[in-house]
Image (cartoon, rainbow, N blue to C red; front, side, top):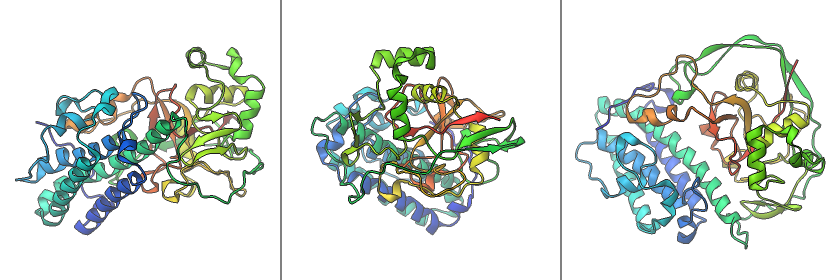
Length: 427
């Protein structure tokens, strides 16, 4: 058994059955759109323990709605297959045993077609529940449905990250989808300049009823010394200069753990770089000097910043600056799935979209943090150790999923996420 947890019960985005159903259907449909270019064989592959098969992502997100909404709130709901509870639970200890994460690629059964039937079964039941449940019941379930939609959007991004890594291990370098075409590699771009902020007492985080994850709460005071952020992201061309200057061979630039990791793994360039080409979701492509560097670890980002005489932003600095920037950029909906060069002369360009930006802040609880109650309390809080924060979203992030307060987090050695660098300095 699990206990219900508390979220904002009537956030604006879930007010009304029609709006809630539309949101649910849009998210579920987008997952299937992303999976459509993949064959059953593509959906089966797991290229490393940190990644999961596309088929598993599709099934796990159905399991989430089945387990945390339908089984809890819909009397008489018939579970599609009781065995799926073990196969598609990710890390929820309170919800029972799980198949080992590193062995998800061994699950040839159920098939991709079975997973499609599973999703249809859950979708039919969810549609009926949202349309027909008593008002009180729907009001109690709506926060979990909203959480489930955002959870599925996270898995949409993971699906793209994971299939890119899988295809990169294939010597044929297959494309997930055809590229936009017609665009010649760009050699230039707007110059980078440091934009100063003299801020003092500020507040970051979320208050009120709008949806946010528990790790974005509570809103709290921070005191910031004067600082500056780069007007755009670090580019491939700038990263090449770091490489040409021996950046990967100078231990004085690296944190001790980062240097040990780089030596052990043989890092000499960002992940997916092959000489003057790099692997993308569109296949091999020339490295565009003006495009943001992508697929670098925190260790690499930190070493680059030190080489450049700068540092990485603190997450409070990033969020404070981002409040003044429009929520626009190169997101998943653009269908590009690749970082693009900055355009124009914006004061702060590329704050949202293109690549997640590493911050020099550990992923820890905000003062007064309270995790969701019950099983959903395992969603974020138990990972608050040994990881670093990233901000801003990427070219594989749904735009309706991101906000200035959003805290992504990964271990410092990880590179398969769409991660890049914005420089900062003290003023």
